Image 1 (cartoon, one colour):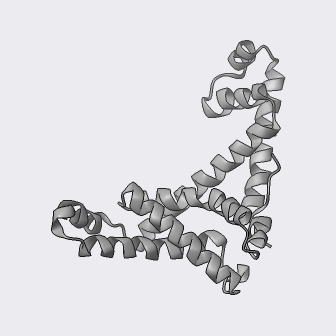
Image 2 (spheres, rainbow, N blue to C red; image 1 turned 120 degrees about the horizontal axis):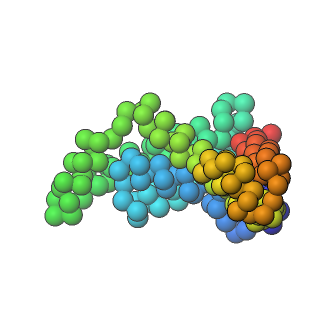
Length: 195
């Protein structure tokens, strides 16, 4: 599977084709849903927030309002998503009381301030970027290389133990770690950069 940079994903949005929309949603829906859930919305409401956020961004992008010089893409999406989460909270408050007064009250009582919401967003964004990078790397590298990385770098098992378990040299374990980390950094830069 060929990795597509965020710049290409956004450029593809200039046309109104379904494949471009699916690619855009596939890349950015996850962190928005996670963020909305972290701020107290239910699964359906979080999905609605993600859909509305992405549609709002695409409209703004096609109208030329998104300017890379005015801020990172993640900051734009955060601003839209945060407003949409607040809108969803207001909609919950207007629902008949029988639909869950406790849930409506809990949303507003537990809603973090904007700075805490920003930290939640940044964490959701970073997790999504890392997950997409790792998913891509799995299509590019041998399973043994990935497994060596997971055991050594993630689980922090000794290199000698990983080498024995996978039937490779200690040096090969270090090389696997280096290769995967190098690729994660490359893909992260491509994901984050919009030119």
